[in-house]
Image 1 (cartoon, rainbow, N blue to C red):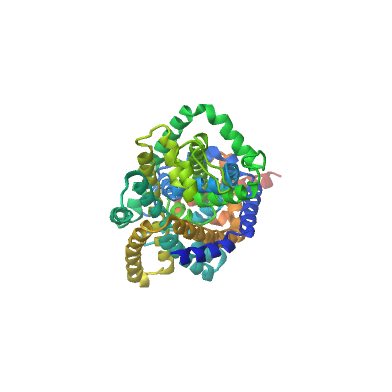
Image 2 (cartoon, helix red, strand yellow; image 1 turned 90 degrees about the vertical axis):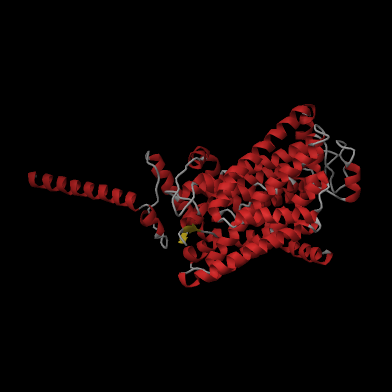
Length: 515
């Protein structure tokens, strides 16, 4: 395991280099400016589209798609990942996490809109993803195959490990449950859900994700009320440390920026392309509507991340890599000596108000957060396999591979439940970074189409119409499915335009005769 960790850390040094940070933030800023900060301007439309319950035999509702996407976003990265960011970058990492999240919403909007645009029907269900965008939008089938292959490896092997590991670690810390037992029970439950396909996964997510988010928000409010006297100090730490000010956390700005960007990207999933399969699965009249709805999830995701940060900081239950040891819990010195961080910080923070049950409550929440995230990861891998084995002639092969992949996911879940958390986090970061490099690179070439779609959407909104997408009007090719989806609306508009043309020509003829 130590050899594997050293190898993965070595690779992460290249994947998460300074070039990556410049690439991601530069893309975020450029997209935000060109889209005129649609992630801020269109907040009202985000919510309006979010509550749509339109669905069909082929597609799930926008609401279900949103929560399926949130299942991936709201995971242990929001709890353990934020704690790790504070350990490595100090309280200032929280500020840079906020800034990055707002900018990442522009990329989220872009990739979700494009995922909808280039979706197709496979086995009676909508399928979409970065690989479909690459092939149908750019003609890069080779890139689509590459991305789909990387997606399968990342979503089946690299990314789920940290979720499984945090479940076993949380239960072991709070209840003393053996990791192997947690892994076995979790694998059985996971199998019962993923065998039901996207319909069962989306229904499960639509129920469980709002529940876990609501419980976490409530817990944060209680902790903040009890420790209200420390709130001013907490915010002073966040803002001063973000700019290398103050004697306690001064000198950590570089790590704060790096960890803020890294954790915001990992927690939100924006830029990875992990959102697009669930976004593409929705039934909607215009790709931009789904893009807006799903990008709203960035804000919800960062709220959950903020909840973790506020609880840890306001209770002073955190340490830093530079030697700061929190005084909020008697265990902080012991944790500093062992180098342990992550979920345990949040457990100790909640333990300040509920000494006997705090660790257990956080442990249960970690299970909910991690479990739904793994479900979403699996669906993304299944969608990638559907792309790689597309066509009626490969239907039997496709179904066989998907079934085998389901078994592999369960084995991976059990394996990562029993190993060191440092290995799990390193592999997850590697998977996240690989997908960000590939996906954002492709988005630069497809971005003009997202801009054109947004313009069309906003023009229809401004005219007081309910937007629908006509690819011929926008001038986008290789998206014939949309002509089928909106055929009645497209036909109605063309009929109206035809009548207007006839009336216009009749009027001109009448004037000509009288002249």
